[in-house]
Image 1 (cartoon, rainbow, N blue to C red):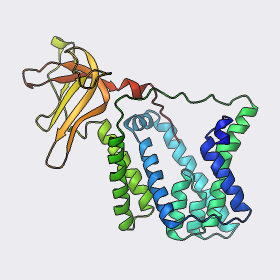
Image 2 (image 1 turned 180 degrees about the horizontal axis):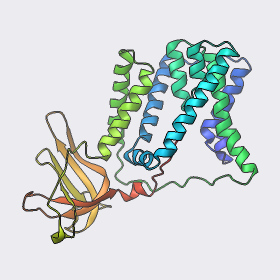
Image 3 (image 1 turned 90 degrees about the vertical axis):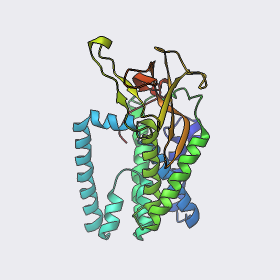
Image 4 (image 1 turned 45 degrees about the vertical axis):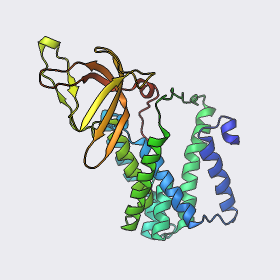
Length: 308
C-alpha cells in the first residue's frame, strides 16, 4: 500500500514481494498452506488468462519480427543462465531450467513446487530477477528522466456483469481441477489460464455465435459487408449504448447483443464487446444484420497492446 501511495510502479506487487523476499533472505520461514497455495495458483491463472484477448493476439501478429527476436533472445538467455546455475553452482538440470526461465514467476514457482525441485534457490533467483525489473528498472529510468506517467484507466462499461465473470471464474476453476487431476504440469495454474483465455476469446469473437454469413456485396451497396447470425441457434440485436433494452433504428450504431441457444448451452442477451450498425433483413436472410463491426468503444478506449 505504501508503494502504491507514493506512486511506485506496480506498487502492490513490488512492495509485497520486497518485504517477503527480505524476510525469506533473513531466514524467516515463509511457508504457505497447501490449500491456500492451490487457490492462489487458480486465481493467478485466471488473471493471466484475462490478458489473452483477440486484440492481444492481433497485436502479436502485427510485429512478427519483434516477437521472433524476443523468443530467440529468451531462449538464449535461458540456456546461458541455466548452464551457469548448473555448472557453476551445481544445480540439478530441472532446477536450473526453472531458475533461468523468465516470464511469470507464479508459473515457475507452481512448477517448482509440483516437481519438488530446489524451491528455495529458485525463489531467490526469480525474486531477484523480478525485483530488478519491477524496482530496479523503473528506478534506473527515473534517474535519467525517462519514467513514464501513470497508465490511464479507460471508462468502464455500464453493462459489465459480475455474474458473467463469476461464471467464467467457476468454469476456469473447474477446468483447473480437472487438468490438475490428470497430472498435467502446473495444472491448476495452466488449466485456469487456458479456460479463462478461451472463454474470453469465445465471448469476444464469433465462436459463441458461430459463423456469421454475409449478404452479397458489390457496387449496389458500395461493397458494404453485412453479417447475419445463424438463426435460429443465434440471434443478434444492436442496442443503445446507454440502454441495453432499446434496439436502435436501421442505419444507427449500437452495441451488439447476442442470444445463443443450442443443445449444449443457453446464453441469453449477452452484451458482446463489439459495436456495429444495424442493417435490415436481406433477400436471403429474413432477419436483422450488423455491419461496420468494431470493438465496443468503452473497451477500445482503454485497450493497450503490448508484450510482457
